[in-house]
Length: 308
Ligand SMILES: Nc1ncnc2c1ncn2[C@@H]1O[C@H](COP(=O)(O)OP(=O)(O)OP(=O)(O)O)[C@@H](O)[C@H]1O
Image 1 (tube, rainbow, N blue to C red):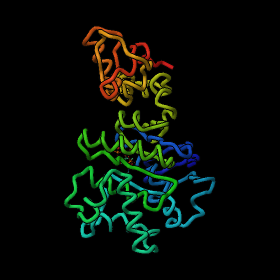
Image 2: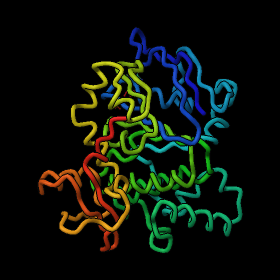
Image 3: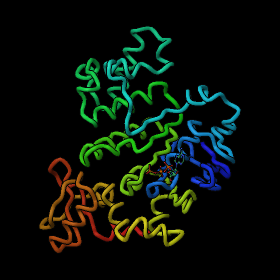
Image 4: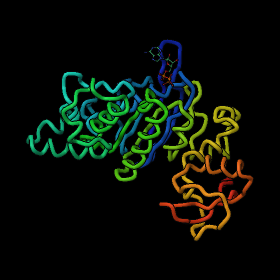
């Protein structure tokens, strides 16, 4: 668990983070969301002390981070940024193995751990371990960056726009991979993003910031259905509920069964927003959902109406 207490950062007369109190729950992903310049990156960097707060404090697992030497603090914190900063003269395996914890291990042990991590982020070790960063696509390089951040098995992961530089398809793939990794590893993750879809898709909670202050902290449902201010609803937009649907699959909402003959069909893996699109196009309030070509259930539009 990471706790921010009355955290402040001032540059001269400008307060870029103001009276920020927040708890990032252990084992969950919290998205720090907000418009450009609202103080997200500054907040993130105060957690690993790349930036020292002007006032207030950060506690990590109950401990005041000012009591720790920054190098010791950072050993327990993985850090992933958009410009991942891979060493260009080292190959992929060497880049992942630069983490201090790996340096003390035998070569064999390190090689095994590197392969494990490459597998975890969806890169085939035999294909990728000897490649240089220049031979990787943006998405592959970003995966190596994530593998490196996970190498020391830190309980906390800070991610600053980690998927920001990727094209939409690569971004979606990597977001999916990240969700699967997180399902297995349960890290305490703080994810800085200005992308609403990403926050809705990946955040267990969202902390929405505006001009250095916290506007709302809550689940995606809280922000969509119970916005705390007009800023929150305006920032998310009228289509936020639809955008949230895009992060689910058709079979997340279906009633399992045989399906109904004569209904339009969709594949179970289709995203729920597109399934709603099929309902509108076909003029049908129900769809038969197919899994591996066989009927697996029925999706009714009312099950997509999620207002909690
Ligand atoms: N070293 C600095 N000196 C003075 N002002 C700074 C400094 N670093 C950041 N700022 C200002 O603090 C504000 C918050 O910056 P920050 O990078 O935290 O925003 P952000 O929400 O992460 O934005 P973005 O999404 O554009 O990255 C901005 O107005 C920025 O200009």
